[in-house]
Length: 625
Image (spheres, rainbow, N blue to C red):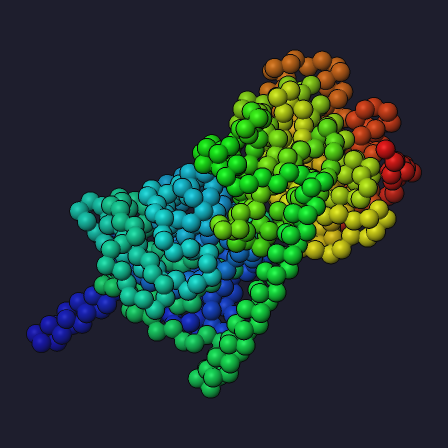
């Protein structure tokens, strides 16, 4: 009898023990790793590095058994998100509970490596996740902002979300606690957040009653998934504790990368680095002050210098927001003389923002072309460390907005816009006193005036060179789908890389589709590959925006022009820069002054380029105006 009693007690103790584990660092762990995930020599779990458009998975090696629908669990972990560029990272990570640790078919970018465009919302996912999102994807995932935590059930549209006071991508070590407890027919999910080393807050950042019956299965894997986009972040987990019986154990993290013997050395190194940084900041501040002073002197013959109060009054205290981008927000304003303007506020706290401000003043302030945005003036407000640029107001917003949000444009309007952008690029590349490489040609940077004429704008990434000089190596910047492959490899922007971006714009404008759409199936995801598949079959007009056919009919002239633009787009998107036409040749082809050269029989690749063509791609490089 005593043996049976002991056996029962032992069984109850084993049952009560549940599943639990603690990782104070991951040196000796046996996690199931996938994608870019790996364990660093320091013992830190790195889910993604700062590579663009990758995903990573890291799950506990054994499945967790949850006995019934009244399950509970608790977990805590310390994470750090370190973006490639300050305040510009992506896309975030998630703590996930899933029966599928390999997460087959998952996409990076906004999908966080969890799902793809065909699995979103399906009950068969059996996915419960808490996302730590650092990029705003208002469409289609309805993200509230670029710094939020959400609870996801089988989709990435959060059931409930909250905005933490902590900046998730600050690079700081942050501790999260997630508690899931049964509450009647629901489960109470609570999420807490604090800086690592601080106590668990009394009040949760996020608390919700969610029906997890039928969602979380009996045997699941728990772990992390993360992804990056064109902008990237290193997503790091420093320690992790999990339990299905009571609260997860407290973490006792080691001093990653240094031992006790090196503590003094670390203090000395940190102090020296800190002193050097202070000196560098002082020198940088003096340099920027002198450079801005030169701008003030030059302003007498350049763009007008506005006062801050003038622009504050013109915009009614920055009330009417027109849009926002990577380096600032744009507001509508009316000057004292009644002229409508667009005012862009650039944060001086961002080094990139300062570079953009200086680049805009140096380039667009002196450029004069009917298809370029006109800069009326600028303002630098020292007390609030703000920089402002004043442009002419574009009542029809951007080509991007017209194509994708306002019901589209007629073919005649699209063709005229494309020819206008080509004319502007020709002026920048060959006809101005210096050669200007724009580096950010895309639909959202093509503004439209009251008559829907194109104005190429946003010169924050532009580079100036003397004609005939070789471009310098810099970091690859731009938007996914518009950046030429050689720029990603070499970091050298050229006029040919602008031509590549323009080629993406050509296809996008005819097809009514963005250059990269991750939510589409694999065959249709990349626009240039999709168009090439129809070109090879001799059906290239099948890719045209259906709205063009419904609105305008299908005249022979319209079909001829659409085919011309599509094939020219494929030519501009050639993987080898020397095979692309120059902008003068592009303008002549669009004006039908010269014939379109033949395309290769198949889509060219770097591994299998087509044979050279006996065609004179670039006519004289420059024509003095």
